[in-house]
Each structure stands twice: as structure tokens, then as C-alpha cells.
Length: 442
Image (cartoon, rainbow, N blue to C red; front, side):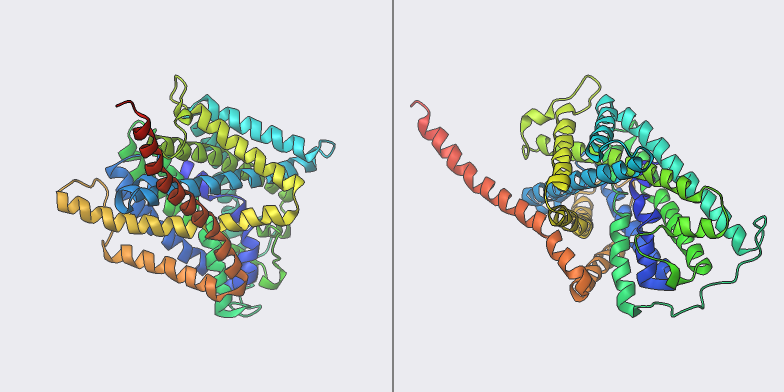
């Protein structure tokens, strides 16, 4: 449920409109290709996580496979990504709540939403897990109900509705051609980002090997079914020219089918999705920060935990960083916050590529040492290289497509800046050590 909660968000309920508008009838294909990438990446990550459960997850695996620098850069980049997401979701949640409570200032609602989710995370890992379970349950139930209603409408068994004529022939398969499908795939890859949270949470489970092995594989299939299934029903029931980016195609279809209260119900579902991602973001950012302290790559003071093992200071710092980003959203020009979001958007490609490279490297090391692997990547090493090739193809398509080129460039800003910090930190350490040695009494 944590993996489902991390993936199924507003990107599906609202953002899918932009994907359909760009890719047309081929939108389900874009979601299917993104789902294949997610499935293969999660299987590689499951292999490493089952062999060595770790709160640091792919940051620790990158450190083992590629060196300390890779672990430092990936860990801090991932923390940065979720801090920005936390701020964005807090603002988005406040805007939705503001429609029901228009008299409250937006910043007050944002602070309240952030505060509640912070308290949930401060209680314990169980508190986070319980909240995420129910958030995910609401989202899954909403998608199942939507699939049932849409399928009933398609086959003419929905009460009071005749069988609907397929809208699939009302226009070209892809209104913007092959480039539109490629552009849609890049958006889809980012919308799937979040399933990897399960390998971080599994390290705190009673049986981490079983937890990660089960969740990393079965959950991905459910995600693909939910995404591809719901988008396929939408594109065959609504003419693609009538689907507008920024508007929920789910609400559009339900209103066309005469479902009462569809808009309000979907608003509540989207709010649940926003709170779910916010909850998961605080948890993930704090655990990655906690893992960095264990490697000496973050202040040791952040390693302090409560009696229940909750990294209280890491949670507080991650939340404060989120509040700072919220302040940027309100006080600075919109371009500043847009820069943060665009710079975080391409992080998925970087993280996924490092996971693939780490798995290839660590699998070879384990086989050389004769170690055991409870979970194995399918078709290794061919599917591992195939996955890396798909990620490179997505990156190349972003370079080719003008609308994605800027986002890819901004996505490299954070890793590049963190790499510079690592180099400066590494170069300064020998000097500090030499100074200390010179000051020691002879």
C-alpha cells in the first residue's frame, strides 16, 4: 500500500489530461512503456534491497557499487527532490481545502496541513504506515469504482445509459505525432516516480526481505493495471479533442455519464492523494537524511531517535526545509518555485539510471563472492542493460523535444551542485586533518 500510495497521486487524476492531450489515443501506450520501465527498475532495486535491506536504499547501493561520491550525490539529490515535492503538495492541498474553507488564508492552511503530517511522522514509523495505508486505500477504491463505472458504460450496462460509441476514431491516433508520444512518455516516467519508497520503508518492517520482494513486484503490476486501464477507458469514451490539460479527465467522464457529485468526490480523492504524497515525502526525506548521517555525510546530530526509533531531528529538519520552500512559493516570484519544480522533475531519470548501474555492478560482485540473492533480476544482465537503454532513450528524447529540453537541463542542476559540494568537502578534509595533526602536542 505504501508503494501504491507513492505512485498514485494527482499526476494520475489530473495530470493524465495533459498526457492524453499530447499523445491522444496512444496515451495508454505511453503509460504502458513507462510501466515497463518502472517494473524493471523496481525488480533491480528489489534484488539489492532483499540482499541488503537499508534505510538508505539506492543511496547505499550506489555507494557500494560506485563509491562514496555517488552515494552522497544520490542521497542528497533524493532528499532535495522530496523536500520540493512536500512543499508543492502542501500548497496544492491548501488550495483544495481553501475551496471548502474560503475564509482561511492559504498560508495558514498550508502550515496546518504540513503540521498535521509532520506530527503523524513524528509519532512512529507505524503512524506513517497506518496513515499511508488508509490514504492509499481511498485512492485504490476510487480507481476501482471508476474502472467499474467506465467499463459498465462502455458495454451498455450502466443504469440509464446506452452503450457508448467509441470515440477512438474521432481523430488521429496521436495529434502531435511520434514526438507527442515521446513527450508523453517522459511525463509518465516522472508520474510513476515514488514506488521506490517501499524499499526504504521495508528496512523498518518486521520481515524486510519478504516485504520488499512482495511489494516491489506485485504492486507494480497493479499500478500498470490502474493507470493503463483507466486511461484506456477514458480515451475510448471521450473524444481526444475535448480533453484539456489541467482538467481531470476522470471528472469529465463521470460527469458525462451523469454520476452525481462526481466533481466534489474527485476533489476529495485528489486531496487524499495530495496528503498521501505529502505524508510519504516527509517520511522519505527524513529517512534518507537519517541514512546520510550514518555515513557521516550529514550532521551527526540528526541521527538522534526517539524510544520508538523515529529519527525526530531528521523529520523536523526535512519539514522545516519544506516550510521554507512553501515560503518561497508565497513570497518569491512564481518563476522561482517553478524553477524548483522543474529542477526536481528530471531527478527520476538520474535515480533510475544509478539504480540500474548499481545493480549491474553489485550483481557481479555478489556472484564473484558466491553470495546469496533472495530475489533475482529477470534476464540478467540483458534486461538490466535494456532498462538502462530505455532510460537513455527517454533522456535523448528530452534533449530532442524543445518542451522537455529545459526541464532536463534544470534536472541536472541539483546533482551537479551537490557534486560540487562533495568535491569541496572532500578537498577540505585532508587540510583540516593536517591542521589538527600539526596542533597536537609532541
